[in-house]
Image (cartoon, rainbow, N blue to C red; front, side, top):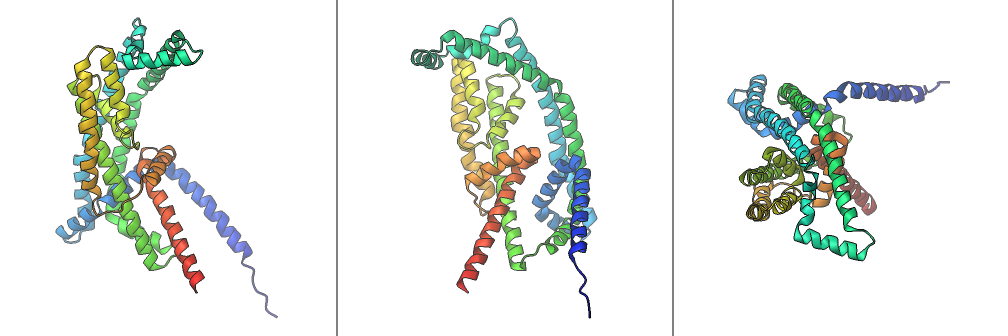
Length: 357
């Protein structure tokens, strides 16, 4: 009589060993997760360029990867490092300027409350509620103090943060070379482990490629252009730290509906409160006409012919990805959401075929 050997213990052992090794590998890679993801994203976006460069150097993958890595360093990394240094300097100057605004002249932080529209709103609130004008002014001053305290603690870590960004960029550059050289082989090995039909694998890769390019090229390039325009507008009206506000506006540009108005609209109100009506009108027109309309020109230029994804998955993926993975999550989040939606689509297709048979 033959006894069938039980597969329970080997499977449980393999599962536990895989989980422990996966946890250990994640712990090893976690400090470098940001540079790894950025390098992988850049290598993916530069894949067509990498292919053409390989043909130009007669199939030498290492030579093509070195040349493209050097090009990324000159075009992206070095300008980003310089921008990071300028951002840290201007942010530190801005913190000092805000401290001056909140020092002996703390009442000046109440200036926006004296704008006619804001003043009328305050009068309406005080007439309809038991809240007094003095309470609103005290809340504004207290809020200003807390903001200054937060900025002070933030300003103390600006240069340390800038140094971390610079080191991360050069680590990303090092990893980029290997992704450019061996990325195709890595992807092929991963796809071999996916238990899915080849047709669906090809469709899934193509879909994610289109979504990634649409999100990164469409959203990122539009945000960068709008942020740069906001910085130019701030420099024209001589507001402090235009690079800082350009970076903030680039992030705000990713917020649906409101966008860069989160940055330039309060600045226009501050200019009105300070008596610079002409500058405030110029900044408002610049923001509404030039900055906001840039979205209509830049985004179609980069996402034409690529996957069109609705605003809701992008926005949810952007916010969730930013919270989970940091800056890279702005692009990784929407891609993960797109992957989940594609898998749901495959599941519906499979159930539909099963029901029809």
